[in-house]
Image (cartoon, one colour):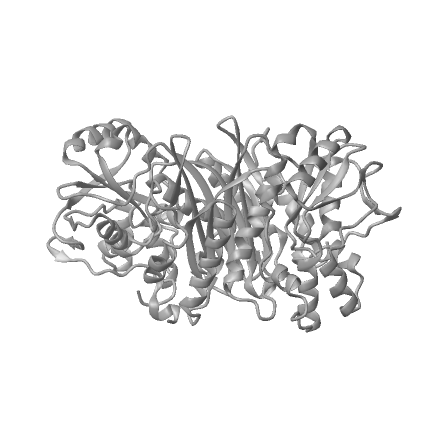
Length: 318
Length: 318
């Protein structure tokens, strides 16, 4: 079947189990792969993209390398793994300038450092401009996608929808001069290192998923893996997002649900853990939104209505 | 500077130190990157390529995934690291068939298994057909590129020049029906897992390099890192290689020195360790050739004459 007919979600579902070890600390198809090591788990993840697919107007080249490492770091962090090291494979045409390769690598190195990890080199190739980062992390007890009836949904972070707004502005040709926070989120998305602050509460966490394809798709994936529905009753709507949405004439909810690329984490917390997690979050100042509960049949509902599944489409329809 | 003017070797030399940690178990620019972990070293490596750049006539799609993992495994093994896990990022156009993605992944999974490791998933992207594998391994005491005056050069393995011959046949349009070993080496190159058999002799090893760009380039890299010359006095010339070279009218030495892609290891052994390493090699039946000695100024000589440096050129001149 052609990939644009099959779609990326269905393709990945078929590819994920191939060669994946039985009884691994994380199941195939989760945000990262894992093997048991040293009484915990070693996580490995790769993420690739064409430069033209993520480059926003005015974006510095360094930001592409930053994004490559950030996307992988976010997957590791959402599983409660501490990032250890990254590598970067790049493709560039022969008439490209070395300054581009240097900028991509510097951006990747800066991101690795921001997540407490090293950049361990990479590989350069001739080809249309593209990047593929890989990263390794270690977790004592990695948190899979999962959840149970009654769990509370915590959307960590305060950048929900901001990268989506930057992408929206790019395609509309809107200038972001008045919205520096949105431009920053679009150019320099950040994985949430503070997710590791959840480690002491691991026993009360039942699952998590990294949000890179938009919140709707993220929650659909979490719901499917958990075998339980998710009922959203509140969305994080950062003030900068509201202001942009107002100016651009779009619904801010649309940007949060379908914008993507925020690299925040959606976490399901057992009811008996909510107060503790909330106390941690409030005391250390990690932003977050308690956005709903798990329950009912697989799928995602927002204020009672089913939430359509449409995220970023790599090859076409899903 | 344009990449085709600068060349890949010079480019990688500039990129390798960026973000690379000080005092790491392997220096920047070695065959793999490493950080200290668990009393040893965790190694991470990535290698990417366009499908069109490595696809030989008649090559099954599965072989591309196999090659992606093999190239990374070979780098880990040359550093005496045990491969633990791999991931595979792929690029394919929307009108590609899912069978291609499945075949690439199956090939990668088979290779991972062949090297005693797991395939931990990957990532699929729209783009011109390309693959980037990454792999992680663990070594108690990784073996860097290095060496000292007087060391003996051991070229492990018996597939030197065979992949080079397959590539040569591809570009000449020659049929390999009469040379199944060469076709097999071209389609299914194998990283030498038996390199790990050198572990008990670690104290007598002073350096090693994975051979993927041809023996001449490999020895040049080893010589530069060691700060000492390498004098080759013998080349491994497998019988299949001689037969092919004879039929094709090329010098077999040319294929060994400049063919590349054999994924064998070149190891420098201290004089006092040679007899022990040789006893191991002979007793377990690991093929290999004692091909020369380290000595003199940086550079590579073959039977007294300087060996020109010209390997695979990713972007153009080096």
